[in-house]
Image 1: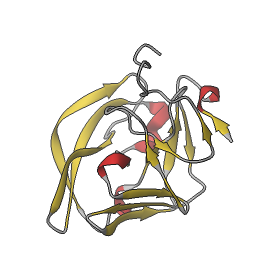
Image 2: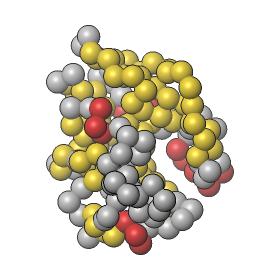
Image 3: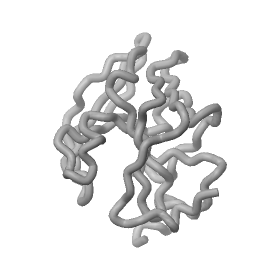
Image 4: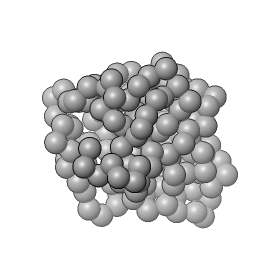
Amino acid sequence: MENVWDYPRPPALEPVAKPLRIIFAGRLIAATDAAFRVLETSHPPVYYLPPAAFTGCRLERASGGSVCEWKGAAVYWSIAADGKRAERVAWSYPDPAPAYAALRDHLAVYAGAMDQCFVGDEAVTPQPGGFYGGWITSDLIGPFKGVPGSMGW
């Protein structure tokens, strides 16, 4: 079991030991065993997949962006597959801060916008709240940032 309150700040970056899969529009759109995860206090892990993992969809650059105090400037992506489109459901860091250089161009995806996301064979639960992109698995202990009342955490 991992307690998200034991995760560090600034966040840690580590390779993922399990394969990841993403299902959208009823089909497998991404799969990899070469991902990273970011671990930040009070958040479930955010998983970043290499661009080559996305073979079953089109990734289209979306408008806007955001800035993470740790990782740098993010750009957003829309995902399209089999006539279905999800707007601004992924993000990446084209020029991340040096401590997060391994994330360059890797994409994180909001699990709640997909049909299902998997860590190993386990389907994840999306992190609560509309802004955060963590993936919750059964080996995590919360509470998690994003639940009602957590804005000031």
